[in-house]
Amino acid sequence: MNLSDQKTQSGLSNKGWVKGMKGLAKHGLTKVTKTADSLIVELQE
Image 1 (cartoon, rainbow, N blue to C red):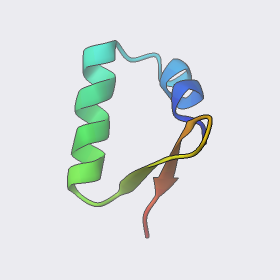
Image 2: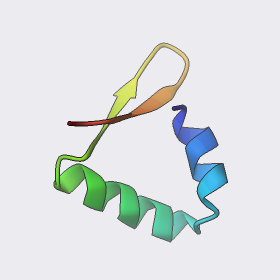
Image 3: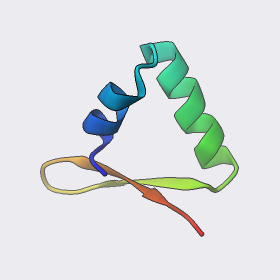
């Protein structure tokens, strides 16, 4: 899913969004991938 779309749909403040995304990445649950034109969030299994 596109990172900016997901952020908008979450309804979190910017600080809450960053804290949540860092926490998920720290535990190995998500991975953010940069493509030519966007950032994609992938769930890790």
